[in-house]
Image: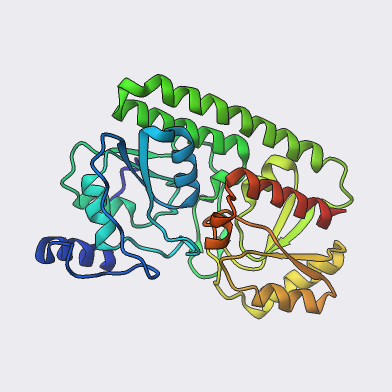
Length: 316
């Protein structure tokens, strides 16, 4: 876990105040139309995951030995999300907290500092993973490290290993179970990596234009180059100079597909596409799945394979 500490965010202060004053259960605070439900006391490991990739990796490793909650509601973009008081309550009751780190969950350090739960096992899944520089974000300036670690399957495998180790620490009696589940999915990460290497070998182009600067790790792994219309956080409006740069880049490299993502507005991507006579398509950063995707049984691996097909089509 990072050592740095800062002032509490307004949302964190509100959450703690409601915990102390209101008793949490009666104030009816909603997130995207839902209320965070408490854990069931059934002997399973109680896990809080900060957003979708952490949730998906945790449930794959934990299987039927854990109950896991995804803190960010389905269909919600996680960059500017902050926890509600119900999330704080569940963290107080949890055995393990899994978060990505690399400054994606800007609220995590402050919230953890408020907890009375001294037994909580906290794992920053990106700990020990080689991080890439994040470049420049139009809204937030120099952005430090790129947090989108999970979009490289090999780095995602390292994140899952850190999660597995946290479960083994919190629940040593089931260490072998968690280890076996991890080994199963480690093999699937290896297969996914090879599919990307084979699928992107020898494409006509190696350049992509994306709405959101989320694909640095994927591009680094498979020798692609991304030009992002917006910064590391989606919906940061590009200035006219940036728009012109993107349009000129598309013309120079003969790019005919402009990628956008499901959880952010496609408006800017469509504007660029119109200017350069291109089409738009989805490239999913897997920061969260829609309700429809979840109901259809999609997960990290299925969405990554859809990303591969989208890339293959665009680059050929």
